[in-house]
Image 1: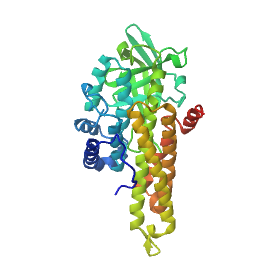
Image 2: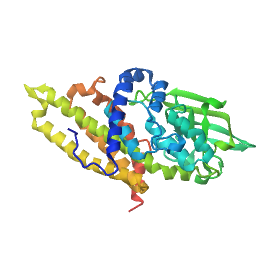
Image 3: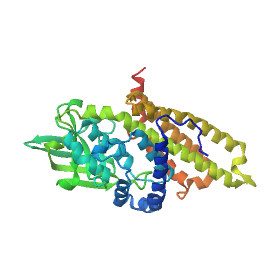
Image 4: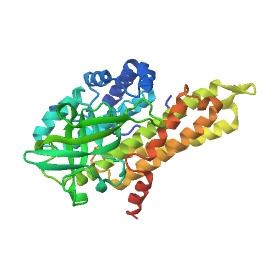
Length: 385
């Protein structure tokens, strides 16, 4: 029985349910056995991307004409959920599928779509997006990285940090200034194929509180020459507006990840407290345990309904920035709250790295930071009052 009993949303068709079962088998069979090795390495093996591409799990929501599966965000949601439920840490395909590829689909020229999307779908190209810099996080208008036009090419200079897939990616969308004198109007998005340029360097694979199997890196661009056709779209200065239009999906994706984490944490805790004994009886038999998990389930049930509603809105093209900000803020806050409550019910074992709940506790903390901090989400919501 599922942890939460909610009505199946209309977007989750019978075909999608069957597809979900196949995704679950893929993660359990092909990737889950390698997680410990990836945690030690701090990076997911490159072959995992090729295997996911072969299985048709990359760029699922991209049109078939560009190598995708012709699906929608619902396909990406069940992918994210099953990855979490299988405990497959570090595999940054959600960013590749739900953030990087959509930028190319929505803003790329026809030539750019045909050039990059099929190779992303196959796993030949692994995507990343380089926004944050050492001196700028949520303030994207203040980026210092520049791409200055020189004849039929741009010369890219700058430094990025906290970049997911940073050690692996060979297609990187770089947020930069094509006109440093302007604020938002000077921002553009450049596509860098790292295998084809000189002057690009990967820095440290950053050590983090959680997400130990995920490569999160510094990136350096020193006089990197890229052709003018690598400007995403056809005009300079559109980058900030492109970013703002796509942020609702990015932020709701974080909520989907958080919702999956919530459900897994509750299930793990129910299983543990039924088996673990204290004072001669199962921990689940104590009223405090029952009440704590009852609260978690009630809050999680409300959250699940809201997440599925937002997904339906997103699929229909109706998810606005304010609602997406609510989704990201509320679910990531709740994820941290519930995982903390669940860890407490594990007692001392909950603090041990060998138990998934301890890893989930560390992994969940960043959800309130990336994609725009939850303080930024509150600011955006407040503007609608």
